[in-house]
Figure 1 (cartoon, rainbow, N blue to C red):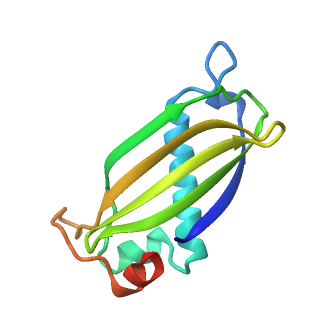
Figure 2: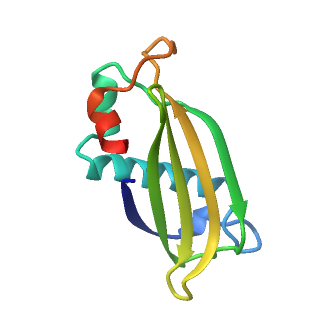
Figure 3: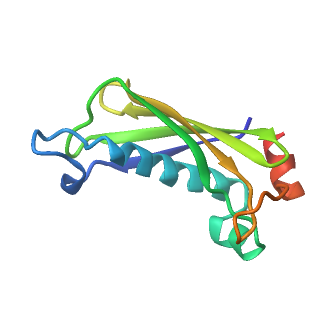
Length: 131
């Protein structure tokens, strides 16, 4: 199963009034990590979309375990797997680097579509990378 690690530092704008990361930012970090994983496999979102393949999110889940705070360094561990010829699934683990504690875990499921949103088979290079 292909995997990657992405590092981010929590910015002040990503926190709420209590200084804890606002919950929706974890989903943004999932996207950052997902695009990094695809890049390590030799394919960017831009290139994929230029070939007429889009990967909209059709399911998202995040379990929050420990609040990250401003200026925390985080590692997002990402794995991808082929769910079918038209779906791919990514799992994520966000870890606080200072303590190695898991702040959140989650997953997203994506359907391959054309520009009009109609289902489309994943390109063979994606199938091979995730199989």
